[in-house]
Image (cartoon, rainbow, N blue to C red; front, side):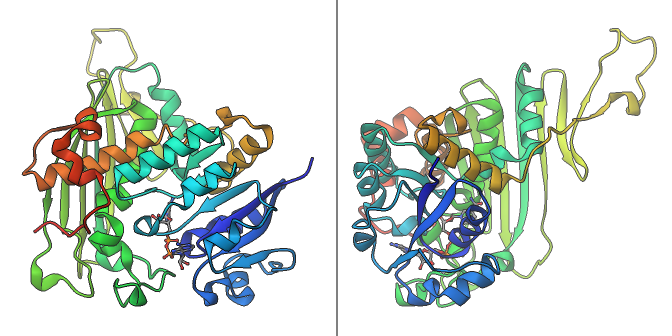
Length: 387
Ligand SMILES: NC(=O)c1ccc[n+]([C@@H]2O[C@H](COP(=O)([O-])OP(=O)(O)OC[C@H]3O[C@@H](n4cnc5c(N)ncnc54)[C@H](O)[C@@H]3O)[C@@H](O)[C@H]2O)c1
């Protein structure tokens, strides 16, 4: 069987990571790379991130997406560009019959994402979004364990630091963005830490607990004199997501300057116990003896580390699943499709809207349709950080 011929759009941090992984997957053949900045397409630079044996022999490079689309050699495209820089490329690729792996978040605007999804559905191509945490063996173990449980509440605390943001490969300084190229710290480029990073946590909770029905959010703005080089994303975020099942998910994030120490806490409760992530992996705490017990159960008897399934790292697994889905024209190999991922995007974009509307409860069905939220869905006006 011939390999799946793949092009990558955007050879920055993420595109290079995908290229490194795809380079080692049997059945994946890299045929085209596209990036507007010539330095990002230089063989020596790419080789230093990918593999000693990387070579551009047999790989076409393009500065413009329109030129890439004239190449007849591709079965699938990976989109690894900043979410604020999409300009119809995914719609065009879908209409050309190309299968699509799009990095999260696929847009900062729900209407733009819906147009992508509509084109993908109409074309019937295979499409997914880069939520590789679903393929992490610890998270798969949790999904299997929670499958038959009545879920009550999940809590995710992420104490992040401003300095841990990566210097990216997009030349933001010539595109009206930060001169440091740290675009993930900027609201207009990243859509907030909830949209840029919290979407991973939210999508995982969806993997375990199903879709989001509503959200309510309060952000704590960064003080004006703490904004440097466009790094205007809020200091902190307190977001509640109501799941369709009735479970509540609390997402609490900070991104602070001059702290340098980050950590986190993840916990999920069902009606008979709770599960948290410890250093060794997920551990469930519950009682499984006769009820009522004759004496108080020991702490040891309540502690149940989850057995982990066998498998490979999440980055390899998500791309292998995509390559297989394309080769077999069967999206049942995916753990999330582009369409099934739309609820994750709507939930985090609705959190931004909720914060900007004073913390009102935003029901996602209304967020998608109601005139009240139209300005939060559309790409019309440039976004600015809350203050
Ligand atoms: N799934 C994950 O865990 C994960 C991790 C990191 C980044 N991401 C996502 O990947 C995407 C890219 O982020 P990154 O960290 O690689 O950013 P980056 O700035 O390092 O790389 C983006 C690349 O895209 C190129 N580019 C910009 N506009 C383009 C266009 N119109 N056509 C072709 N190329 C274009 C840039 O020159 C740059 O090389 C973002 O959506 C980000 O959120 C996902």
